[in-house]
Image (tube, rainbow, N blue to C red; front, side):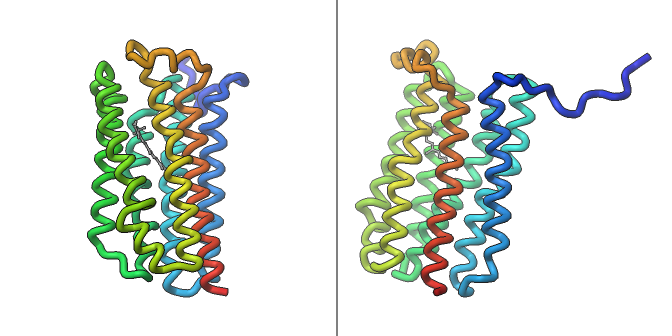
Length: 241
Ligand SMILES: *C/C=C(C)/C=C/C=C(C)/C=C/C1=C(C)CCCC1(C)C
């Protein structure tokens, strides 16, 4: 007789710490989304969009984490496709956050376009190196890193930095914190990439560091998506008070 009670939830190995971080990621992203959405009413109208975008970033991530958790639990391999779909939606939204807070100093659409284009280049080349041309992971990773540093330059020293200085006060302070997130929090991603694609590359020793690509990506997502959102939330609180 066929078993009609097919298991709907894949078994979890108690020592599967990668699966554990996917699980915690789901809950953290979901809780953060509820927090941002439910706080919306307390802010002045013009700050609501920024906090709404914070919630959308963690919400989109929450949905992808549910898929990634299941994909990992059923296949025991990296959910590269879902990972990059998540990033290609959420990273441009993080660029929108920069644009929204700098609008008070007169940020133009061209700043937004530039940052979105750079982030898409960064992610598409990263995907090609991780999933399509794994043999040339170093080269594609290099292209991706160039786009990443162009973003870092734009916010620390380029047009976005000038606008932040003009805005001053709370906006400048929040911009600075976001800059640190991009410089320090985002650098975890290329580290994860080096660990995950090390096989057969000149940096093959990264495979022996005892680190796991997905754990690094999951930790980085929690820090950056929720942390970013909280910086915006705190700024909206200050501006409303
Ligand atoms: C919420 C998701 C975020 C903030 C994702 C950020 C991803 C990156 C900054 C990825 C960067 C990469 C490089 C700089 C080089 C290697 C390939 C990537 C895509 C991992």
